[in-house]
Structures are given as structure tokens and as C-alpha cells.
Amino acid sequence: MPTYHYACSACGHRFDAVQSIHAEALTECPECGGEVRRVISAAAVTFKGSGFYRTDSRSKGSGSSSSSGSSS
Ligand SMILES: [Zn+2]
Image (cartoon, rainbow, N blue to C red; front, side):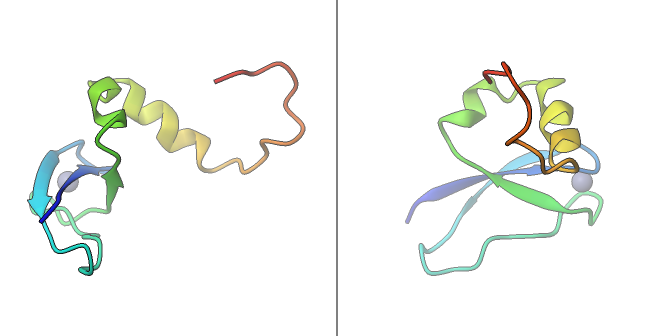
């Protein structure tokens, strides 16, 4: 079974979970009960520290069509 990586958007707790590919993604942080998101393993490498909060705030403004010149 594959190992999935999760990160909590509330407390920043990160953990791995071995799940069936048919299992639903976890949504609750085991540490604080907050909302967790599944992290793609390739992205988990760059997932150390402050970069996490940047992606979190970006999800609020769903406007990626009108921003000119931002290549990220
Ligand atoms: Zn948490």
C-alpha cells in the first residue's frame, strides 16, 4: 500500500499514513483535530517550514488567470 503524506493547516503537524489506494484521504489532524491536506510526496521535499503558509493563503484568492508575470 502507498504511503501518503499529510500536513495540518492549523498546527503544521506533518505525518504519514499508509492507506489503501481506495481509502479516502484523511481530513482530520491527529494532534489538534484541524484540517489536514494530503501532500504529494515530490512536493514534500520542499515542504519544510514557512512555505506551507504561503500556499495556504494563496488558496483563498482563486484568481490565477489575471495575474501577469507570476511564474511559480
Ligand atoms: Zn494539527
